[in-house]
Image (cartoon, rainbow over all chains, first blue to last red; front, side, top):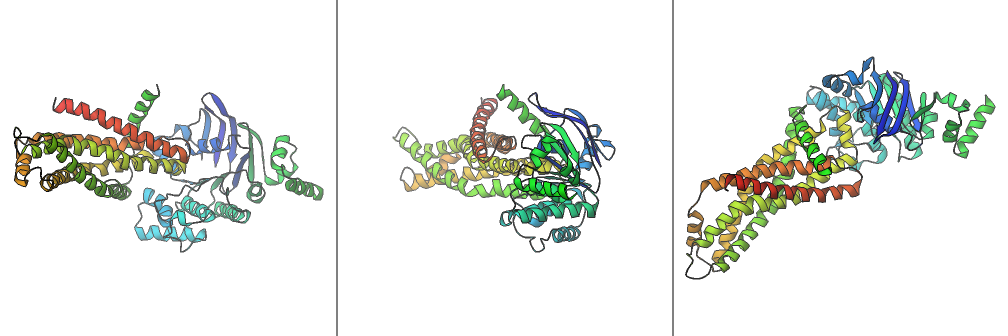
Length: 254
Length: 245
């Protein structure tokens, strides 16, 4: 579980996050949504420790991130898996080496054992027999799956995904969304996804956090999002005619 | 102010390079890969440039020292001094700033653009140690390249001198052996070690701290070449003043 209390972050005296408080539960897929420039990526990068926050607390399972020493931070980071927007695969390594990388860095396992683990997670993301391919030889969807495999190979406690289905066709995007949701449940981990894809919200959003101008404007589940009368949320989520119709049908039926 | 800020940031980068070291079994592979990329893959261009520039230096020296007033061995002597003291360590390093320096900046810069450095950081890896330290260790072999440049420069000089009909082979070799000061080799290798450190760290700095996209990677490479060359020229002056002045 991750608890965030009154998180604030500014760049050049310009406030980006203006005191965000929320909780991310274990075994659930939480989505952070919001318009471009709402502070989603900065929020995610603060949670990951890539941007040190100015004020507030981030608590990972009762341990305050700011009060941790370097070794504790390193131990925590080794229990975090991250899927970046552009996959961030190491392009000088093969798919197998990419997935094996966290194991080589943090575990003292014999090579054969590492290879077995790599093959297991590659099978889980349906990428068997792709071990020797280079990332440049893989499609966008495959690269995302390799990134997911690399993120989960170390049996993480937390999974962070920054727009995991951006640039993918709708069908592949749903496959990736469902894969993340299934892995979250299988490994019972805390998963946080940064997205502005409404399909993801409807498909896997067990908890949804809506940010607007650096403020937590609304949070709830995907069923709540149909019923909410928060103008900012409805303007954002139901901006397309299709979703307006979907919402109307849902409300009419219920 | 930006200049001072960057100097401070560079010093902090050097400090961070020695903290939280990467596991040896991973580091070993990185060092071998960087040795291949920076040293082994530069052998061809360095050999080619050294041989031909050695020839040109000799021809120019021979043409400006014609006449009975000058001894025959002078061309060999002057070629040796020029190559050992300046051409091999300094000019080759400036060529390497273009070849290896821009390679280092663009490879690290691309990793920055594609969030690969962020990926290392969120895993709890000291990305500066992971990326820069192996390059520093790989370039410890740089004086070996400089030795090859010295040898091929003098060989090129001898070929140009003998086959151009400027002097005889025995006179050229006599010149190479005349008044040889072993400390000049020490001076050249001290310079090579300093330039190797500059070649590994200044381009890494420009790649690591670049901001923006693909276009900025190109700009960072150009900037890196300029600053690496400037640093080499300035340190060349300082070392020469300290050791020979």
